[in-house]
Image (cartoon, rainbow, N blue to C red; front, side):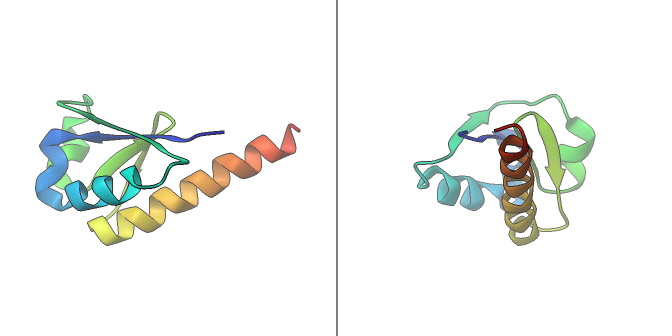
Length: 83
């Protein structure tokens, strides 16, 4: 399972641009940047990304990285249950 991690261009002022670049270097992730993800409330207030379509948000880009990694582990564990 390759997680899809989506970022909003308008959210980059929170530092998510650096996180996106870091995650792009992982060949096991599909990282996509969009002009808008339609989550303007989250986008304005704090760093966020979508992981397989689910919003993951945090107080900082560093914390967002940890939250994204945690969400990926949760999704992988769920897939393991079905195998």
